[in-house]
Image 1 (cartoon, rainbow, N blue to C red):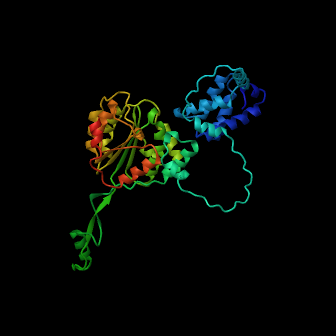
Image 2 (tube, one colour):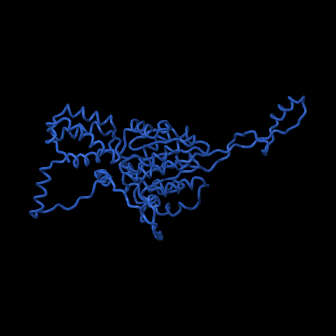
Image 3 (cartoon, rainbow, N blue to C red):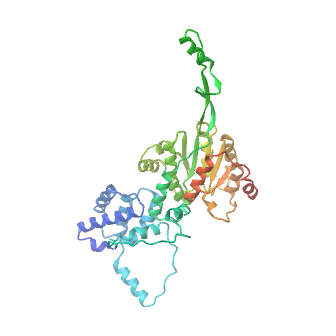
Length: 405
C-alpha cells in the first residue's frame, strides 16, 4: 500500500492512488463516486501533503457525507495510507519476541473493509466438468442462509443482496370497509337516486335497479423509526423496505426520530432509492445520535397524530426502547398513541436474543401500550411482519410480555 511520503514528488501517482482509495471505499459500501474523487484530489492541493492529519481531514471532508460512515473511513485510511517503515519495525519487533498486545475487538464494518481490500482475482478457465451427482441433504443455500442472518453481521455483498430481497416485498394490509360506496350492478345496496336518474332517460320507466357496494381499502400505515446509534444499521436497511412500501401503496407516512422527530414521507416518495436516501440524509440532522423516545412521541402526538392517524391506521414503532431520558414522558405518550390508532406494532431488534427480558425503564413503560411485540433483525422477521399485517391482529400474544414488564 502507498505511503504519504513516497507520493509527494509525483502528483500523478497521488491522483491514481486517490482513485484506488475511492474504489476501496465504494467496495466497502460507502457512496463514493467521481464527484467525491475529484473533490478529494482538489482538496489535497490545498493542504500540506506531508502531514498525515491534514490529508486524512481533507479526504474525509470530501469523500464522506454521513456520520455513520466516519468509522469505516478512518479504518480504511489507516489500512490504505499506512507507513511502510512502521510496518517493517513492527515486524522486526515481532520477530525478536516482543510482547504482543491482546487482540482488540474488530470495529464495525471491518469485515466489509477486509473483503473490499481483497482485489478480485482473474479465474483461470475451468476444465469441462463431468456430470456429478451431488447429495444435497442437510445443506443450506446462500439465499436460505441470508434469510436468518442478522443485519448487524452482514458483509457488504450480503447487505446488497438483502436490499434486493427487501425491494421485492409487498405489504398487503388487512383491508377495512369505509363509508364510501361505489356503483356495482351486483352490489347488495339499492341506489334510489341513480335508479331515478336512469329512469328519466327512459321517459320515467324503470328498467334497471342501480346498486352499490361499500368500498374496502387498506388502512393508513404510519412508521416511527428510531435512528439512534444502537439502531443505525437496522434503520439503514429498513429504509429500503419503507421506500418500497411507500412507492407500492398510498397513505404511508414515515417519521424518523433520534433526539428530534423528522417527517420523511415526501422524500421516500421519490422513485429512485438513491435520490430518496440522499434527500433523507439532507433533511435528518440527528442520525446515529442519542434517543429521546418520549419527546419524539410527544411531538408526533401534538403535531401529526390528527393528520395521519385516521380510518383505522396501523402504526409500526421501530426502536430498541433504550431511551437516554429513561422513561420520562413515555407512559402518557404511548397511551395516547395507542388510543389514536387501530393497531400498534412494536418492532424491536433486541428480540433476536433468545433470553431477552424487558428490564430497562423505557421498555417496561412501553410494553403495556402495544398490541404486538415482534423482532426485526433479518429478512425472515420482515417476511413474518408482512404476513401478519395481511391478517387481523392476534389476541393474547402480549400477555406474557406485560406480565414480565
